[in-house]
Structure formats: C-alpha cells, structure tokens
Length: 95
Image 1 (cartoon, one colour):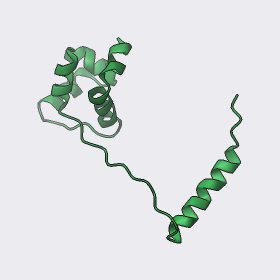
Image 2 (cartoon, one colour):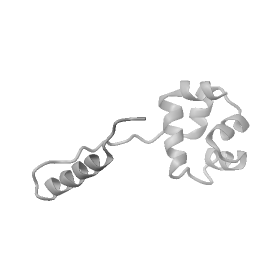
Image 3 (cartoon, helix red, strand yellow):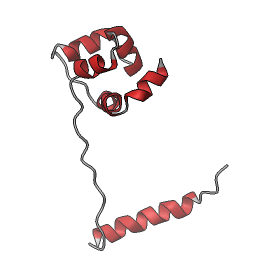
Image 4 (cartoon, helix red, strand yellow):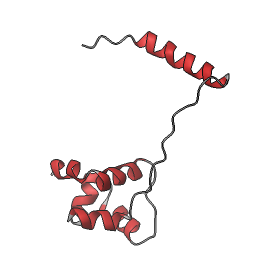
C-alpha cells in the first residue's frame, strides 16, 4: 500500500487549475512526434504482419490496410506504434 493522500493531490490539482485561470502559472505541454509508417516500424522490428498485428492488438487485415494506405491508425494504435518505434525493446520482451 502507498501512503498517497489522494484528497490532497486532487486539491493541489484544483488549485493549479485556478492559478492557471488567473494567469499565475503556465501548464507544461509536450509535442509528440508522429510515428513512422507501420510498415517501416514492423520492418525495423523484423516481424511478420501476423506477429506485429497481434502485439498491437489489431487484426492482420487492419495492419495490411494501414500499410497499403487504405486506412490510418487512430487513437491508441498511434500510441502503440510510437512506443514500438521509440522503445522497440518493449515489443521484444512481449514475444
């Protein structure tokens, strides 16, 4: 069990929002880069379409559609592709 005080964390967050609205502080932002094309990432990982699709949790057909430009990855799939590209060791450990 942790000794976190959730109530205090919530209040701190609310106070941070209030301060931001009053112009007393600025919020941190991070610009995320777009991942490379799925086919490029898969190729770097040396995985088959079936294996890569399985690790991403999508059908092989969906991956094929992405690779052939018929569809684009959305939402969580983009995040997983970014992780696969920037931290390929994570995907190696899942095998």
